[in-house]
Length: 194
Image (cartoon, rainbow, N blue to C red; front, side):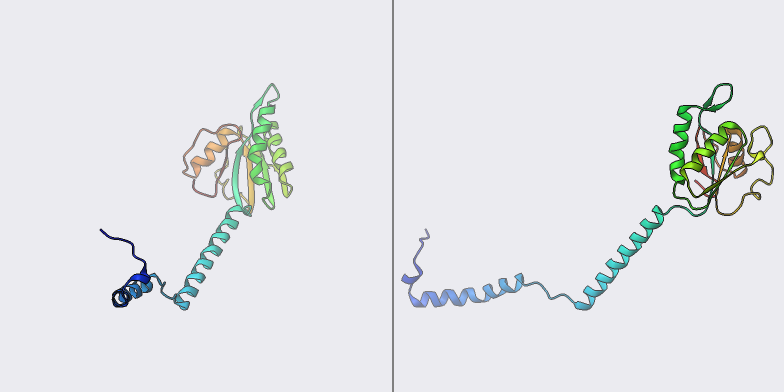
């Protein structure tokens, strides 16, 4: 059984023996606790890599958030009704929601079918996209056949085509794209693959 002993009562030879035995292990424990000194060159390289990564991520984020400067979109008119086939309140709400993505698009050209519901749709987008121009284009009407050279007629820059369900479907087929359910205020980009 071990008893606690006051170190002042131990014989000097025993204290000396304990100090000699503890010395090498105490030094090892101290050395093990010390951290290796960092290499300044490796530290600088790691910091430079981390900074480059942060800059690349910030640039990608800014690019993703930046409004597009060019592109071709097609938008089906909002929900319509009545004898005049004008937009309903729900249709106007659908269009306002779809138009939000054009608020910051620079130099947007809006081509629309001359039908009332399309013109109303285009005007809502035009009001929400201050840097836009509006123009009626007869061949965007569903009653006329879509010209075979419609793709060549499209100008450069940011362009929104406001039209009808059959015209949207025909455009997508001409581009060998899947033709989804083209609901009211359906919008898609024509110049990018989905």
